Amino acid sequence: VSGLGNLLLTANSQLDSALAWAALVWLSFLGILLFAAVALAQRLLMPWAAAGHA
Amino acid sequence: MLGRAIYPLTGVGVMLLLWQAYTKLFAVSRIVLPSPADILLASIARYDILLRETWPTFLESVYGFALAVAIGIPLAVCVANSRVLNLTLYPILVATQSVPKVAIAPIILVWFGLGIESKLAIAFLVAFFPIVVDTARGCSRPRRGCSISPVRSEHPRFRCLRRCSSRQRFRSYFRARRSPLRWPSSAPSSASSSDP
Image 1 (cartoon, each protein chain N blue to C red):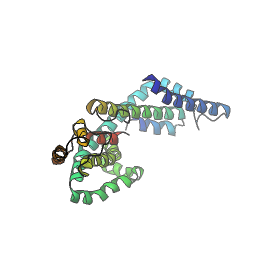
Image 2 (tube, rainbow over the protein chains, first blue to last red):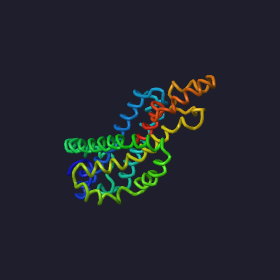
Image 3 (cartoon, rainbow over the protein chains, first blue to last red):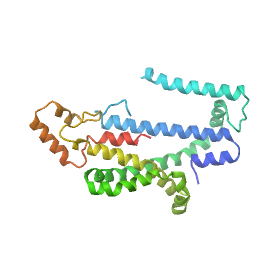
Image 4 (cartoon, chains in turn purple, red):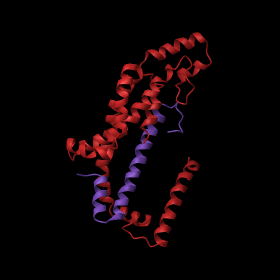
């Protein structure tokens, strides 16, 4: 078992809240990164679609 | 570019400041709510473990998303072009969406185990429905009569339709209609659904 979710659960059960929150923050960064990847793909592949809304 | 980035950065900055001030002013326990500084220090001190654990999570998300695209988009084309399929499959699609993921997580674990497969299944379920629904919407858009609605995602090839002669309009309409994909006009809809 691996991944940020697992790290979060482990840190939480050890009352290491700072690490659990750090895992959360990294997860949200990962989300922003993937969101930006889709937005970039849209801009490159479908430039006629409104660029701003993605 | 930077001018626009100012707003979200300010928003995040103000939130972090308030958070920091709250935890310090009220001496909130570090276990209940660590301050942003604590979290920053923890992620610097444990960056190796965080980085190592980010990779499997990243792969699981991307694979699950790819799976949802691979199955969702063909299905959306079918649903958008066939009334029978649409009516038959829609309740099932809604059902897959309306069941809380937390509730089916134990079942998924029993089916797929603790490995990557169970995470893939969850990621797939999360991404699948919006992709199908929005792609289907994009695919069926040009069908609403001759006047392709002047939507934001309109492809330049179709943009002339609003101005050009009715005959041309008719022809383009049929050309658009013959392609079940409505490609490429339907493409931005898929992307809009892919936004988390």
